[in-house]
Length: 428
Image (cartoon, rainbow, N blue to C red; front, side, top):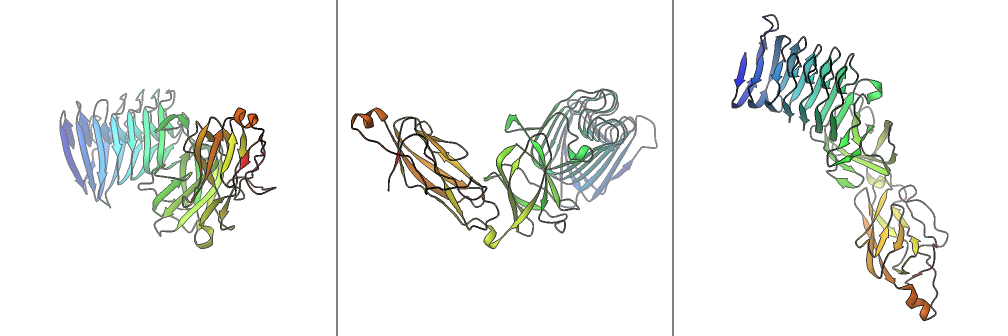
């Protein structure tokens, strides 16, 4: 047995097999006590199993555990009775548990797989940055979060990794145990799968850690086809932004799916790169309060965006005018034809997601359109003048930015039309 008492320690488990589940109730395979802090490295296959009501790898209260691993490092931790697989024992709240890598399997009977013990054991703080993590409660605790009998959810953050959480009889797979209260869940990366309720057995609704006011929703994404099972992802672009979602140690499952939690957005887009260096992507409207089930298509050759061109020449507008820009995305057969508009000076000329430019005040601004696939750009210069000046010299104009009768929504058919809103002029 291993006990770290009120100390900081770096420990490597290399083929350790500690099973004290058959001994007295107080036996614990590996325990952190009295504000201990352990940096644990996993090498080879390791197994920890504790006695009745003790955590398999017991980390409660003010104790802190960080798990790292070599490429083949793994751990199977089993709590006894109300003890969490990794976390607190009976009637205890989980400590601070950070998993950075390795294959970690944590199982409990009535405690959480990772988090609180049974009988009011709160989830504590759980942070997953990488690794393959499988957390299971075979009773009324959460897979990750609180234990049975009133264990609150705690604070759970997933930034990466391939995570599967399961509760056999509890209210949710990630969150509180039976009779417990919700905590806080943040998902900014990782493939996070829960086995019940269509994969959305999470409570409360997860948020984005970078913007805690933004809820995120499950996107079940098939990466090409089922033949891409167990593929490591090496890159990810969400809505045209690299590193917006963490894919450290993210793999497709046995059916070729990953499970991303993303904000609702229309239009939205996802592009991932698998370990064969192939890119897969799709533009689609991500809905809230549902599972978005989509098939990411192979992006290669003629399917990749090669360019974008704004149809309108530069614009002359007067304050208060609105004109809708349009753009063509090439080639016409590109799979991911989604583009986004921005202004470098929105106090002069603002632009919305549909390319509607509004002249706000006198001055100049540049409107840019950027494709989600490949980041291709084009620009349009806007000059805004005072309408009273134009009226004083008898000018008249018409804002017709784009080809006459132009059509198509940005991202849907590769263009944005130009429509007259009030009055304006374009420069040839």
